[in-house]
Image 1 (cartoon, one colour):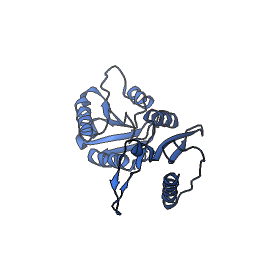
Image 2 (tube, one colour; image 1 turned 90 degrees about the vertical axis):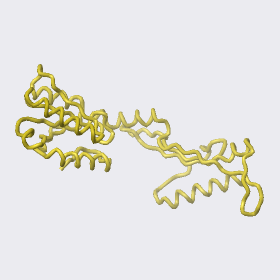
Image 3 (cartoon, helix red, strand yellow; image 1 turned 180 degrees about the horizontal axis):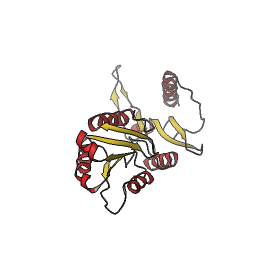
Image 4 (cartoon, helix red, strand yellow; image 1 turned 30 degrees about the horizontal axis):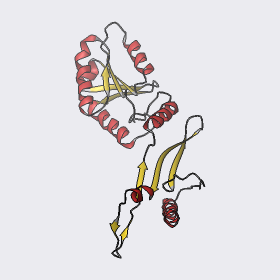
Length: 213
């Protein structure tokens, strides 16, 4: 009991130092020790317990683990269990439901689609795609000659690509791309190197929208 109370006290002190509101949930501790549970709400406001930090004094005793303390005496350590996401499957389900398929750029499996305005610009579209992939972005191109440019843009938007880059003669000459989003917000012509920097910022800052400019 004394070890349990000490572990609980340490967790409470940690939460108080964190500074955000928290509540006690009596009786919800594991058999091996007290814990901190992080509960989040999904798109329907249903609570889900995900992340957790647990202090376990039971297993070290069962396995007779010990160390020599400052007083020269043997002591049992306390094990810390930590799960940042909890169940990965549960977290993915919550995120999928929350975003409704419209993943933010940094999480999206379909970040960028490159579309040439005509077949003669396929080569430049491939160059743009390869450069973006070399910068660790998830990028595809649509070179299907059977679809119009507008149909390709629409397909990319329905597939929830965050950004559609359209390239033609002007973009090829200037080493630029014409940028629009899956929500049909047109950002216009931007230098390829500049858009790479903006994509980097979106990914590093983990922003929730596609605000490039």
